[in-house]
Amino acid sequence: MPYTDRELFARLIACEAGGEGDDGMKAVATTVMNRVRIPYGEFARVSQGGNLRNIIFQPNQYTCMKESIGGQYNSQNIYNIDPGEVHYDIADWAIAGNILKGVDHSIFYFNPYSPVCIENFPPSGTGKFHNRVHQHCFYVPTMAYRNT
Image (cartoon, rainbow, N blue to C red; front, side):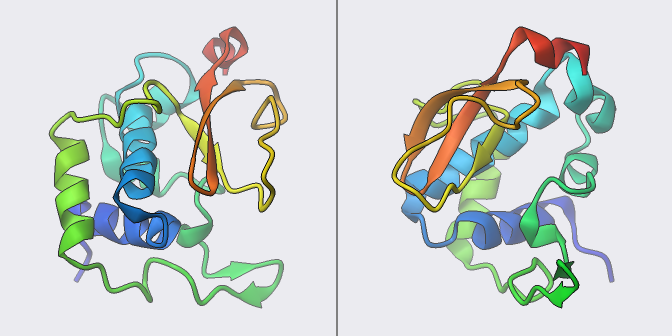
């Protein structure tokens, strides 16, 4: 039986930011929903008017959506995650239109495994550093993103 959008989103939140506390999980959830709601660029085309499932399943966007990485099994994927009530609560919070202040309009994030965030991410220059929440760096779209 396929997961509902809510369960899929809760699993993604748990997998991508489960160890980041409420603010870290809300920051990731905000970014995912910003992709769903952005009215221009690549994510607008992918979401086709607001389809969360399309954003979550977009290829090569979330490590947790991959069952293997570099030819090795990725045990930390959404199919192995058992989300808790907090993950569902944060999914509901984000779906309802809430955003975490400080993440604002960010549409990209990543964990650099370093105390320093790079200025642009992805390397294509479509995201500019905006803020850091725990281990993740968050990026707002640049003018170059509009042309994606």
